[in-house]
Image (cartoon, rainbow, N blue to C red; front, side, top):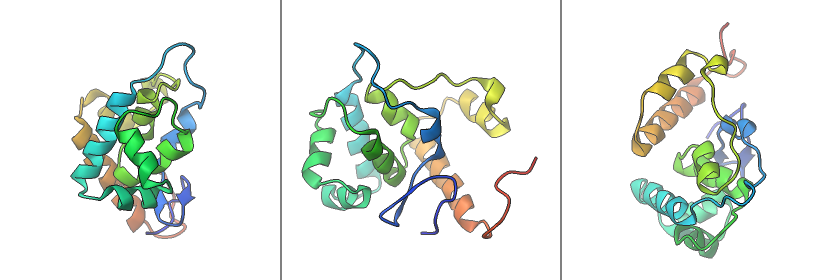
Amino acid sequence: MAPFTGGYDVHNSVRLPICQLLCTITPMGDEVGDPGQLGRELADARAEVRESLKTAANAAGVSAAYLQKLERGQVESPSPRILRALGGHLNIPYRRLMELAGYEVPARTNANQGALGRTLASASLSQSEERAVAAFVEHLVDRREPGARRRER
């Protein structure tokens, strides 16, 4: 895979979403996320791409045992770094994983979004549709010529 200039590259194979910059990494006070829902979404996404536990874990830089615990809802406060890697590999928005894990995620406003952001915010996409759109955008970015402008103004 070509490096993703707007994010991070973990083990030279997993591009990570840029929305990580919009999220904080402090858990929300007494509010705890839903480890069960987080686990279900990770397991569903892994099943959707038809990967084994070991393959997905290796791609995200975690052990298969840890990923299995995450999928079973047995991890109360997963590392944002690990969520970022898993989200990037499984095409799950980092913001969504952070919310499910109980981390504070700033509210999105239409004022600071471009046309694409406003359209997506009002589209009410399913999780599967969100992953498909994310994969398509990553495909477009991969096809971009080196040194090409990221955004026309």
